[in-house]
Image (cartoon, rainbow, N blue to C red; front, side, top):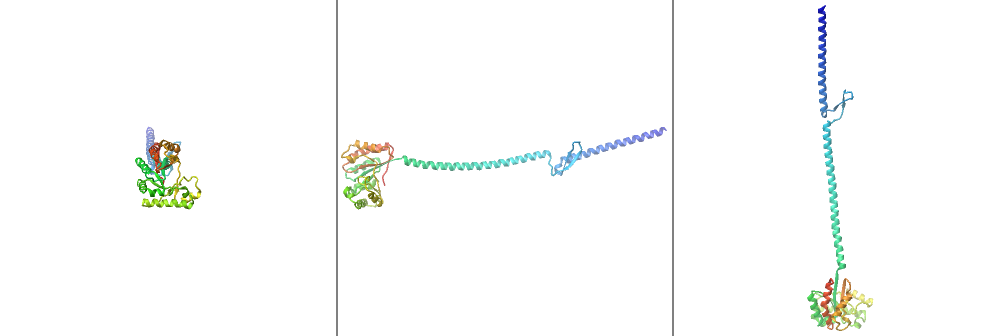
Length: 322
């Protein structure tokens, strides 16, 4: 009876031990399986599955298309963002660079354009503001006064315009040649300066001009192409047909807007001549100054130096009429 009880206990013990071993095996196998699943989840990049866990802790497997690892996702995302940012920066730089170049080009154009407007305006201002004086001498050349006038002009290195009479050119050829040689302007003032003869008719007037031009060319020994003319007594009250006759000859006539008054009497004082120039010059930018170089105008020579110095001090440049 005792033996049967012992035998029963042994069998019970063996069953318990077998159960314990089975449990241990199951637990061990479960751990191995669990580790394998974790390994699969870590290397998910190489698989098309991803392992997740439900709220109750049970394991779930879902299919994904190339699901990245969390760590790698951040790196790739940052890398892509950096690349995209660099592309955007590069694009912005190109846009800004192009914009800068266009702005610089526009500035250069504006500068060049400004630079171009400033020069044009400057030339206009100089043309408007420049003060010019034309010294003109009528009725010569004469044997006594004209050489003295030429001496003064030479001393100041100034050129003047001589409105010559044809008859006086014939009488004083050498003095006339000196006028040309020293670079002064030659202009036509009729042949005789005789009002009755010059203004007898348009035909006689035209003949006076032609004859004088022919005399100028003959004595000069070359074609002078004289284009400037001054009416004896001025053009102020001359009839329209006389003015048209001058233009028909291809010439221009010149009057004056300043004078020394040497035609107002004989031996007008030097002081009066200079003062007359100052008074009639006023604030004009362009002066055509009337003087005479006949033998009776000695004081004109005396006043010439002071007249020139006054005009120079006022900023006038001296030129010839052509």
